[in-house]
Image (cartoon, rainbow, N blue to C red; front, top):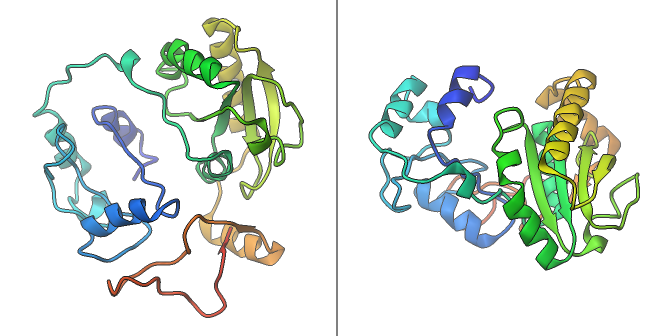
Length: 252
């Protein structure tokens, strides 16, 4: 569903929030609140602009709410946007490791904005017009890091300096390669051009992942990712993760 061009276009009428299910107990509590106390990997609900009122029932995904996505789109038409998208904050991750892993799963280039706190705050405000440009919107993930030790380890192309780093994620999201770097003083037009080129080259050289075979290959190679909280689901809602025999860290 989410790869359908019409769904992608329609989603721009919403503020879409993706909760990182295994990054904190607080996040898991949000998921449980939508699934009657159960915890599963995903939950879906449309919420009013006040961030509280639920406009639909909750379920594992939109297909569990309405058969036709147009019915969900109709909800957005009841509300008129008052803000300017250029005032919207750029999505950020809790950690570089998570950003790299999710980018691999999404099959997107990751734009790392690295520098000291003042530098990345200023850069984040300045490049909003780039991030929300129609030529790159929705095609990248973003991560802001002020501590270089958090991101240099997994990268094959080493660079400890501040800057905009375009990163190609590895197959299992445990490593990556810097394909292009620009200084934080680079113009928005040059950054946009670099992003368009990086996305084009990545799309040409990357095959779409088939989830089932990807998981099998990850297990065969012994690939694992550390989670902030135990991996698994609590489908009976007893408050405890239902671990499978022999499970531990999540396999990719």
